[in-house]
Amino acid sequence: MPSAIDISNQALVLLGASPIVSFDDETTEANVLKIMYETSKAQFLRDYPWRAATKYATLAKSTEKPLDPDWDHIFAWPDDAVRILKIVGSNYPNDPMPKWKSVGNEIYSRTDSISAEYVYDIPEPQMDSLMSGALADRIAMDLSYTITGSNTRESNMAGRYERKIEEARLVDRQEATHVNFRISTLTDPR
Image (tube, rainbow, N blue to C red; front, side, top):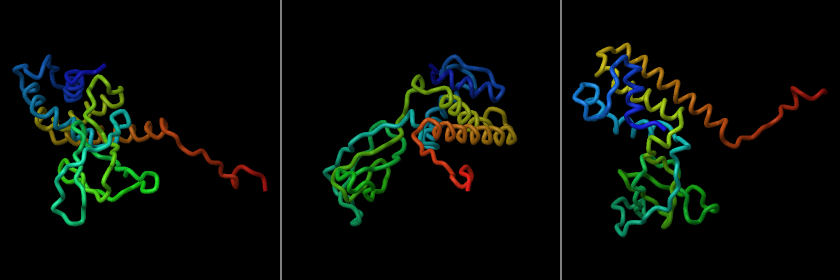
């Protein structure tokens, strides 16, 4: 089960830097991670709809009305949400995709009761190895220039991170329901 320090140390090792014991160490690496870790993690969670970090919730409706006349209701994002993936109305399945828009940490909608599928701020110990490795790559990418001073290292880390996200997409497709089909024109005799 990885911790924030474990993941940070993976990133530092990728950059050829020394590992830390805590974010409060009196080292350049610890100081930079103390500033950047949470932002890098939030951006990482927004980069891809991680199934392991997906939740569902009925959203709390505000008593206030939107100033924008195109919308009737305001709903609050869940407290732990970092990205809204999908909104479903109370009239589901008759209205499976109500119109909505995210404004800051609020959702505007015409539907008076909605639920959300969203990516939440998953604790590091709940991440699988692919996810924690990809987060380490994201952190290494974000810190690479500050720690190494190398534009080349920064570019290499960006490419490495992109490959990890593509790997996550492939694994995600393999671990979900999909349709198997047969191309009869190639397999059936005529």
